[in-house]
Image (cartoon, rainbow, N blue to C red; front, side):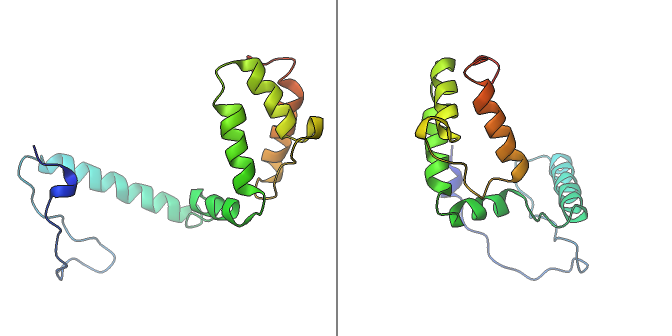
Length: 135
């Protein structure tokens, strides 16, 4: 069995596909053409949907860029993952969420997080110590 990384690289070729329409993928032995067609159609629907919603502005890439440009973004994210998401004990995670959200001398929530999400983190931080299994 060959690994994906061992497959030969494709070369760039010109296409006779109409403008705005992707070229048909080359035939691959062992892959059902109908399955490939359905996959391509689904991706085209996703692309149209994303474009209809504003071209993806504010999507994951924009949020990641905001995280990276916020001076406190990476530190907050790493602390959240290490101290809140990773622990298996809900009470420990709840206590750390409260600290991370600004209580108990911990850090504050960075600006890259939207106002609504910031409010939810603060609400979670208040409720977590009382309802650690829910939050």
